[in-house]
Image (tube, rainbow, N blue to C red; front, side, top):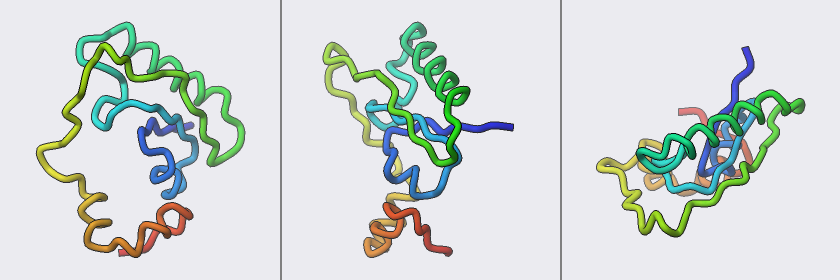
Length: 107
């Protein structure tokens, strides 16, 4: 079964060697778009699935052609809890270069 990852932080996501990656420049937590924007969310999903169908090289990255609309205003993208990967990297900042070079450390 083919898989693809949709990510707003493609460098970090690529560091864990996902098979295919669709990158999008949306705020974290809003990867499919604004709440209630069904048309926009479907467009992102369709583009992600299209990327899945067209990527032939393992580890390839496709940048989706979407921009966060200025009319959406400022988004509070601060999660109520810090994501686990952020907590880990805050405690182990020397591992950041490893993640970016796709050399993920074992726990």
